[in-house]
Length: 482
Picture 1: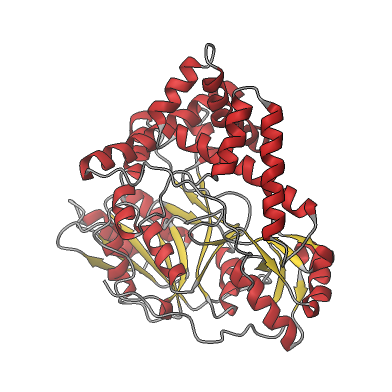
Picture 2 (picture 1 turned 180 degrees about the horizontal axis):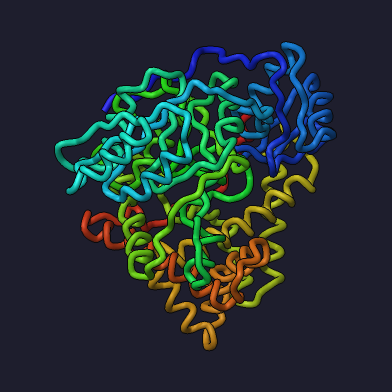
């Protein structure tokens, strides 16, 4: 398939564009050094940038309006590296948008989707439903254009079929079980004032009605819900992808085909990563919300999570190394090992040695030992979390053994802590309508279902790539500057 071209050269921000510091950005050395970004990094900034950085820090979430060329140039760098985020004002329509809806059966769901996007031009692509009549009648009743595939080709191909018929500046891909809430485009369209933005995704939340356990879990932990924080989406960042359930895209930025039709699952991950590789920005804006009909039958729910995991080997083949389950530092692993075996003094000495070496490597950036200590502490916690995440998912057999052996083994207890602590913090933050024990069980079941899909696909493909960690060893080079 042919990739789209890169964003326009220069891609200057317009006058009046508003930006704010991104969540997680921290300033050091009087504003001359910043940590954060997407992916996380350390950068050194010129003296001319310090007053502007201080203004951004003081402004907080409301951000600062760009009024001169220097501010726009600096903001361009900060946006490109993920240290800043756009803060566009809501813009009422009408908007130059065509909605493309891939559909396969489920006319009742399609009816609800078309009702939610009423007033916009809509192209419904029937992906060879066994009984096309109901979809045809629903599309006709809402004035939507209907295109039908002669054979089932999957959602990626259906979106591309619709995309080829679009003549508007923006295209909204909306799955037939999704219902955007009023005002969603007013929030998303202004992001395209940045000429580097190609895709903006809303938050997709489960419309989980009823009081069952699975419905209550889906209401706070849907697989399509990327959380409450806006983000720059790219490989290696805190938010690495967004689902294609609902996406707003710049039509001219997309190649034809835009999606890989050979992927029945994971096509959204592949799409986002290819756009990011070309230099385009993919943004996530959770203030815009879309309701999604979840699967509430336990067997269907678990099977779908398993199917998500089976996309791992296909994605690994297309994007080698990006699905590594964990990338821990060798130094951090040593520190965690000492802690696991109840040896706090060697652990502290190891962390101190790492801090010293890091401070030396940052000599050209900052000699503040607090910066090095902060980086080391965050790294240890992040690596512990990533190992626990892998034990719940890709390494789930080892994780289950660790949970079972934790009463008898110090190492197993330490592994269990790395697995369960993030879930406990998640429960505290989300406050779901269920007790911590049941939430933890549901979370573990979800992760095992996904992880079993990864291991099954790796076995079928005769590859270890999606299962093996990548250990990072000390790097004495100075951090890159923008």
